[in-house]
Image 1 (cartoon, one colour):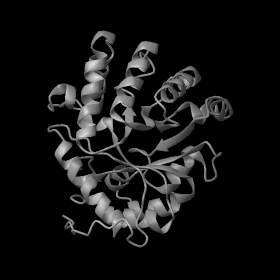
Image 2 (cartoon, rainbow, N blue to C red; image 1 turned 30 degrees about the vertical axis):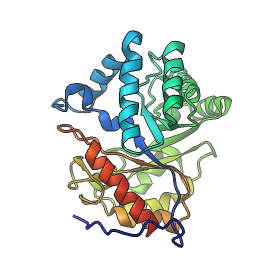
Image 3 (cartoon, rainbow, N blue to C red; image 1 turned 135 degrees about the horizontal axis):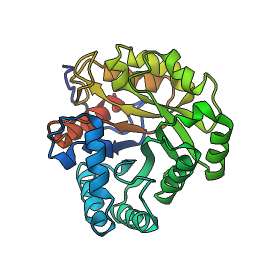
Length: 285
């Protein structure tokens, strides 16, 4: 475990970072299962979609997670697609979501998840993101490998950036480049997930330095050990999070940093509160 160093709260510290820090609602993947998720990620995904789709209860469900995020001190949020899925979110869902976000003063940094329903699904995802004020899709987009020019046209039409998030298959920076290229178009980049780098035994700080020119968002995540994807509070796993923060500082990264922690068997909110505290201190050091 990396010790937490208490630093003075001095916003004028030389080289202090001022990146926006956000909360990804996928952190609540096991919430609808009362944190007894035994069937893997898709079990949580399906349960969450089923809970949030009904329009008659959507305001209460969506408002509830926003209240939890706000209570943790966040004013930035990334909305996981299971909480606002382009496949089922109609105009009434979007109007309710907009109203609830505005009431709480929460700014949406991205729509986060998988965007795997071809060009029509991509267009719907872009519309959903724009409806809640987001300018980025962060996650997987398989159709890009099949129809890159058509994807770029859809992204341009909606003025949306797509940031590819590395997952189990990306075991090196070269694997990330295979998906988006070494010099992708301006509206294509990467959302670097430090936790998946750690799971795959990749030096996350080194990867951040290499990917800096095309990095659009950071999913800052720690994992308990290489070889598995058991997330934990920042600074308590095998990913050298302070080194990652230093890499972002050195490369001049000014984009958003999203805290990601998705345990299957317990509520992560207190560990996320601690992670945010630690991150702010590392950013000031």
